[in-house]
Image (cartoon, rainbow, N blue to C red; front, top):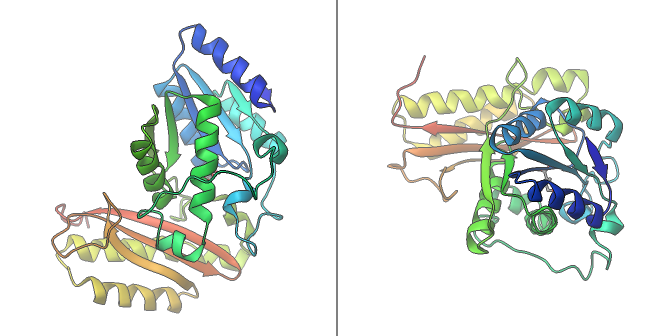
Length: 288
Ligand code: PAF
């Protein structure tokens, strides 16, 4: 696996691969890679001939009181994992390489609608930072396809909308959430949890599962379900940021006859903010 740090070297390596007739797959990340990221790289390898990954902790998508300074940076271990997963090229730029004219004067890509509310409501400017850096990375790599995790469900919806609205010639693939055995969705931020918090964290998924089962069993009283879920989170020791049932296609609030649903949650466990979601096909009866 080749590692490049500049846009010029990245472009030269991707151009060589494209000139060899290869289809380019891209997996953007912020590093501290876990099995969820590796699944994205492997999916890119199944769909493309040449896999490019990026590791860049993007300052533009962090709020002033968020964890930018403490975000885990584990480049050496990440390189080994990417190599084993079949990645061909890693782009690991500096902040100066990505934002050579500074962040304050950076042109911003804003995706209205789908980026508002949920994480966009709690983290003002976050999705502007994501859509801007992903646009820049797409323009640098020029991939045929790019793979993103469904754990960041709203992020995936923002990127799909951006690609559609700006006619970007890249296919977006969403990859299902990878979970620990106890159900906790894998996340780089899980490493912030204390032993006691880590033991409580799977309650997030359990509560989503109970709500999903109720919906599949015909319960369409969403306000009551949400109130119950909210209380269950508090009882489990989690502090809900939001808990919502939305239309899984456009992320609009779900109507009682919407069948493709997604339950989305963000909650604090101590100082750590965890997110998770569960897609629910309300036409399928509960498997239990
Ligand atoms: O999901 C992430 O890790 C980041 O938001 C992304 C897509 C790499 C942009 O910085």
